[in-house]
Length: 165
Image 1 (tube, one colour):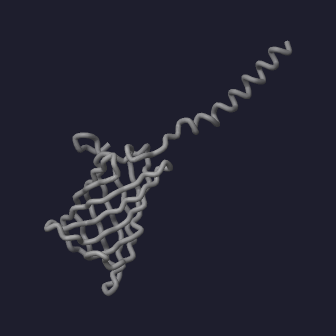
Image 2 (cartoon, helix red, strand yellow):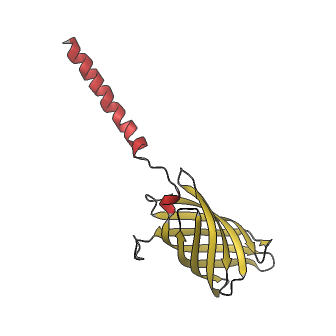
Image 3 (cartoon, helix red, strand yellow):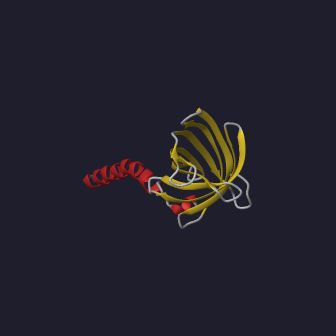
């Protein structure tokens, strides 16, 4: 009888401990591999220009991330209503907690550097979506003119072949 009581207590303790351990085992750490691939994105917000004040900005495009921490992209952007076609090149680092930093340069079709920026992002929805905010913006040739950004980004990972997930 005593042996059955001990077994029942051990079984009950095990049953209570399993739900607490399951989420920890189910959490996967993020890495560059999770970001690798093609992503469709939208950026929207405002840039504070030193003389013109608040200027609306938006962009839509595709990023392609490799496993080594570099990426490229193309986009159509609108700043104050002026439409441009741009190319982006940059580097990234992904942390285990699914946050990441993008450092990028934007070039016009002639290859002239237009601006550099830094984005802080979060991988969401099992690394199939990105949410981000621009934390730094330098406009013009290096060293660039700092302009305060109020821009956010949303992106979705594209399936092989180019269709969204």
